[in-house]
Length: 94
Image: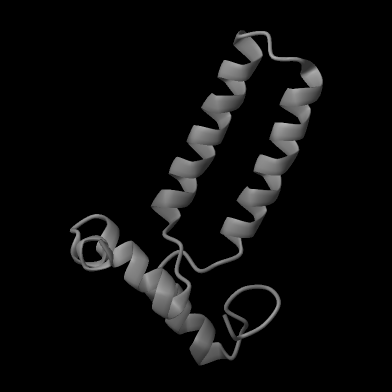
């Protein structure tokens, strides 16, 4: 399964870049936000209690903040390394 995933034409590059450089592609970040937004809209339209929507939205917001702190491309990763900046927010290690 591991070999299949890492050699897959869609999942392979994402997993390799994440494992080696902690690159989370911008395209996937936007897709994630679209899915989160549509999930909240569906929750709203299906009469989920407001408290449940609020907790879910807060958790989704934290996940989005976590995802957006990582570089969106290999070029951005290399630029951060060259400038001596942090890869994420907290350290240069992953």
